[in-house]
Length: 475
View 1 (spheres, rainbow, N blue to C red):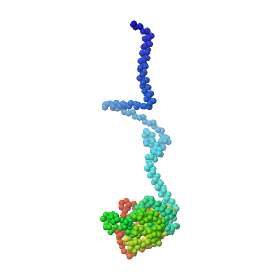
View 2: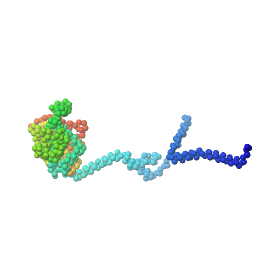
View 3: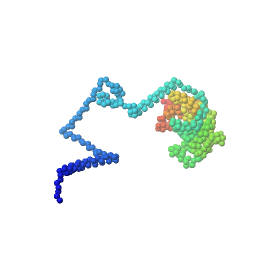
View 4: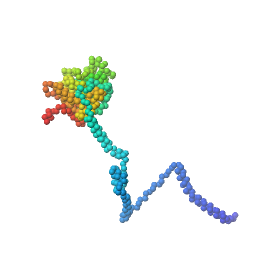
């Protein structure tokens, strides 16, 4: 079979087809790449671009120094007359630049930024201004319109020793936080530690001092021999002192004029006195208990007595020699009676001479007249609520009683603490024999000498009535 020659037209058509197929094959990779990017975009998958490599500039050769940097052109000079903004910035000084010559525009701070960055200084300045303004306003007000001041015993309303508009329960609950805040609870504890021998508490009220007394000797019949001996050894410092020198409370007698206050006092006896649960019913009533005990409540074999009566009319006889007591205690009572000097005379009559002590914790006038002015203005309202005149001059009352009662002598008067602004007083008295003999030492130190560490520095000082040792008096 012989091959026939291809016509020229067919040859040209084949060449054009061959060229078209080559162009199509060259376009296939680009189309494939485009379709993959479309599918990748539709599926949400993104590929990170390859990291860009930083090209480091060629370092100059040692013999060829680097060309110097071109200096920035100076800023255009400002006009001679400054505008309002520049003048305000220069006067306020709040910008960080140095004006037009610094090259930078001054920065302005907002009020919020100033408060956030300088709040300590602003708070201190505001507090100082507030205190100074309050003090100045109070001083001017108190001097322009002084409050009425009454002599002791001549107040418009005579105190009776009972709370005012408050119930005894509200009165007792109100004192919980305030006494702890002003350090009165600590003073009650010190007073209870110094009460030894046969103890009489005048105006016992709701019994707020009962938990601070030492009841070991009173409840000795309910303790085992081992517990009793261990307690004595602890009080003697584990042999540092003789057991005979350990002073304990031997009996306790509480007196108050308010029967409803004594109801709360009996409940506190049940709570804080050891073995009080066995002695006092759960819902104790003084009237019911006193009716069974002949007019008073007698507990713990007669070593704990609760009585009702007016201390100004007379005090009950004690179980000690000649019916006297080794320690007579009263807290915040001279402000609640009509004749405090008479009450002090009754206390001096029942305390053991020479070695006995009268311990008082009172509140009254301060050393500062500004505080006294505030006390005078609120005295009537305080009396209506609590039943006591808290602006009485306690030092003056004690001084008059010392001059009127034979043998009554001030051992110490001090104003403890700083938070009460000198309104609270710790008073310790004794009665000397009228014969003029020197008093016998009972081994007890004044409360000011018992303070250790910072406790002694927190005291505002002792009163001028506190007698000084003979060596200091000569100086």
